[in-house]
Amino acid sequence: MEMLRSPGSAPAASTPAAHRVLGSRALNRALLARQMLLARETLPAVRAVERLVAMQAQAPLAPYVGLWTRLAGFRTDDLAHRINGRDAVRIALIRGTIHLLSADDCRELRPLVQPVLDRALRAGYGRHLAGLDLDAVAAAGRALVEERPRTFAELGAALGERLPDRDPGALTAVVRTRVPLVQLPPRGVWGRGGQAVHTSAEAWLGRPLAADPSPEDLVLRYLAAYGPASVKDLQAWSGLTRQREVVDRLRPRLLSFRDERGTELFDLPDAPRPAPETPAPPRFLPEYDNLLRSHADRTRVLPDEHRGRLATPNDSPRPVFLIDGFVHGTWRIVRERDRAILDVEPYTPLAARDRTALLEEGARLLAFAADGADHAIRITDSPT
Image (cartoon, rainbow, N blue to C red; front, side, top):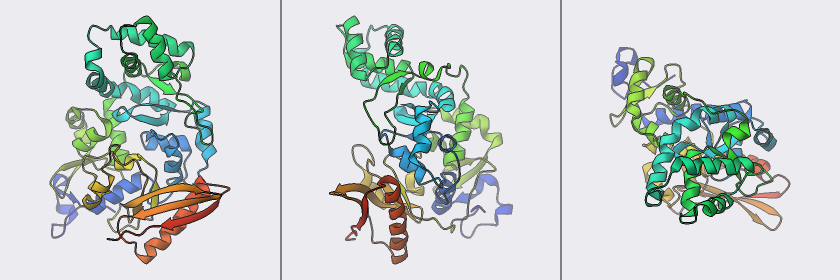
């Protein structure tokens, strides 16, 4: 059931689609349903990652917590085996940041975000690129990482030997931008870890990237995972510009709504839009979860009064938890002697039933993330 009208408006059946208003709670419940956060679902790990259109993975182990909080019975090996088996890879992707995605999506999505990476290269290294043959640098870098996987430091040193008058960091950035570089395991493998070493996606997967990927498919998949959403939301998520043109081509296949500020939102006709009063259980999200990073207007999950608490140089580096579907505070697991302690810091005091539910979910999180250790949960109540 979807919320199709604002209070006092005509019934949904008589309201033109473009005039239907979705309030913040309706948008919240739609997002949670698509993100598998209203109820855990039973899916293979890679299928879930594909449904989410990749998972942000600057913190290498964050996707494990992100999948645990979304999937019933998820185990760390469910993802670790897929990374080791080359069914899932870590690569610079959406917004130019490291994401975990399936091998098939790597081939389709990596070419689509090339403009984002090109823009970041010009912004970060523009003055170092003057007179540089970027294609030649990329070809040399590809040969080096396909000869053997290398760290960026090793790659920069090897390129610097060939071009000693150039900044090694800039040369490495050219290769990272122009060659799809995947980070190899054991990086990103639960219980292992290690330096980030790279080779090309083509060498690692044994297949070329897609020659003609579809921008329209990317928009449709974004809406399936994050909609209803505006063009600005789509651009904030992807880092791509000029997406209005793509959305306009898709308009006959989409529904159109408005939010309470009058912004036009687009959605797939058959996507879930639960009622605003649908219960939402507490959920623990890892650092950098795309739930918080995929809309220009984040109020559907992050209330304005709390946004300032996440305004750090890394823009929310700490994990957060949800109460009633909205960000309510932060958490972390710390080790003290032989105990693993879940430190929970609510932004505002918790109601008794929310505290009980959060403690129950926190115990499950500790059993997953700190198996084998004695557990404790510490809630530091906000003074406000």
